[in-house]
Image 1 (spheres, helix red, strand yellow):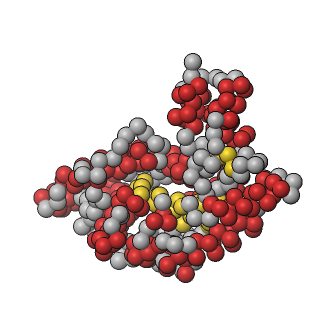
Image 2 (spheres, helix red, strand yellow):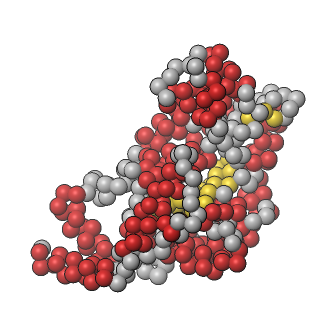
Image 3 (cartoon, one colour):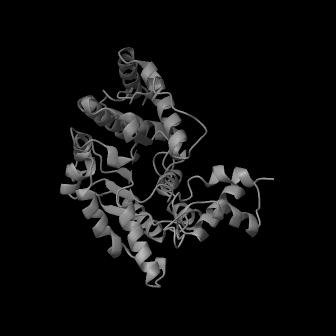
Length: 366
């Protein structure tokens, strides 16, 4: 075994002489900072002038053949450093995912059901013929980022901090249309390098409606029905697109159900998915013009419904519980009443969702 492993280490060492290890460090710092700031809204502000904010495009494994990487992974596991999943970084805790969606996500029965079934089917089918691609739609604050975090927390040991999870924020990482050709190469290489490092990956694209159509088309082959692209298989990847597209349509459907006296829990995917697909096709921005839409590569359009007063109270309760506090009903009502609701006549849906609740409860602390 020693004779087989040593050449691999010599190859890695030789390769390392030609790579910039500072960029590897930047990659780790970059992704931790941005996932922390933007997925679970940590108290931080990104510094766009920092070199670590550039999309990392190379790593130690990028130039090694896939069979070398597979051999090294098997050898590493033979030393007892792997788990039943084959990689300790990957947990695929579907039971935990179901519990978190049920207990922590409020007012989103469609998202709970679709996300759970889609991921459960995907991770249980190692022979999937394409990556899983989900598109989350709805107003800001309805839970799209929150669900992305729940997914990461249950599929990966280190959650959103995992080496197998990457977040891209459209207006931050790709702000200039004139640089789209540069962004294309950076994005393709970043995705390819991560797939080489991790057998199951999660890519999150926030504010996806602001992506240039050229960027979406550049990574379209990674989401298509190919066994491999340039010798690399992407079929074990999960792509999440988070967008405000369709928010008004979703709200109109929810309002119609309320006016007709029907329960919001009776709203089905058949009431919304076709409309979301059509609106995404007609919207301004990258989605409508990209081959993702014309090629029907998005597996599910997941609607996030507007949140009602009762859901805001549940979010407030969770925010207090996260601080180890147990508020009474009067306090929860005060927090919920302080939010802005629409339409003005009915004050039915929270215009801000639950996004600002953790900050707002500061005004109601003793």
